[in-house]
Amino acid sequence: MSDIETELRALVRARFDEQTRFLAELVKVPSDNPPGDCAPHAARAAELLEALGFSVERHPVPEALARANGMISATNLVVRHRFGPGPTIALNAHGDVVAPGAGWTHDPYGAEIADGQMFGRGVAVSKSDFSTYAFALLALMKSGAALKGAVELHLTYDEEQGGEIGPGWLLSQGISKPDAVICAGFSYAVVIAHNGCLHLEVEVKGRSAHAAIPATGVDALEAATQVLNALYAYRGTLASKVSTVKGIGSPQINVGLISGGINTNVVPDRVTFRLDRRIIPDETPEAVEAEVRAVIAAAARTRPAATVEVKRILLARPLTASAETMRIADTVCRNATRVFGETVASNGVPLYTDARLYAEKGIPVVLYGAGPRTIEEANGHRADERLKLDDLEKATLVTALSVRDLLA
Image (cartoon, rainbow, N blue to C red; front, side, top):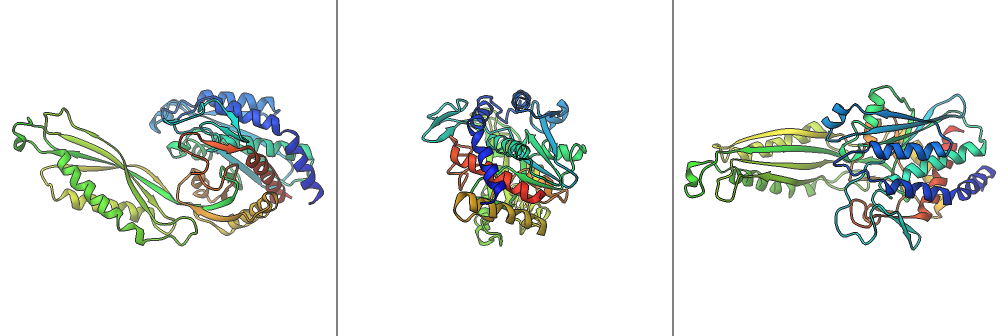
């Protein structure tokens, strides 16, 4: 173990109780998205960061833009520290979370600690990495390491809606131009690639009629059923297409929302549903969208009396690895393997994140942070979301060591 590693390890350990309290305070403030009223959480996070001695830039997203992206309010936070001339590494985590849902045995906003784990919504995805990155930076600053470059914290608030007014907005507004990025992730793998995602809204229009004389109307639900059956048949074909990237698997499609109808005794005149099609890195997003639209159009032709309209809600491109991405990943993997005492390798994951928005600007990005081996183990997006505090401490040290190596 080098002298700097020994020092950074001691610095992280010395402030770990403080770091745990910092994370607990973040968990205690709701930031559910939807509904996406996240400015209050950003205000609290900024207060906590300033109490640590950071200068915090507050970048409120214009209200109209936030609402256009399905949110009520969002304020993105940026912290900057320059060690010397050289490149800038950004550390990005999101503070918005999915709503708690049912089934919790711990208060989702209580930040309760039991058996060495903290419980709460967002404790692993990804308020944890507000804490990971802030305290890794504090350790580097305290160490006096001679680094060539700068570190920025990008703490954003719309990952659950796609990221366009989080990292996407910071980049488009010229607020930051980092040379490399580490985004929120888990501790036992370094993510170098992930799926993209297509969300489409399908609206089927018919004509209402009294249920006693249904033939005088056009049943939108019957037509929608034809489209849904076609989409589910299409889903069965996707298993034969497997990504070449380890950890990704096959494309997926899911219908997650459906609504329509007027009353029980009325032929439904309108049905709307939304679908989610995951795009593996080996696919072209535009070709995938054309493929799904063709399935819908073919099914719609079997019920010509109804009309079917398709609207794109989201097109998130897959994250793919560049040579520079792999160099960063190798650095993080090396440090994580040493700190955790087991092999930590790079791979892909089948979900999608706002890390892709940095990559789309040509900025190399990997995902690494505090968390278990899988999102299922963390209960991410489920009841009793949890984080092992030992993983938080070790991931903080790994982040500090990796940034040190990249800026050395």
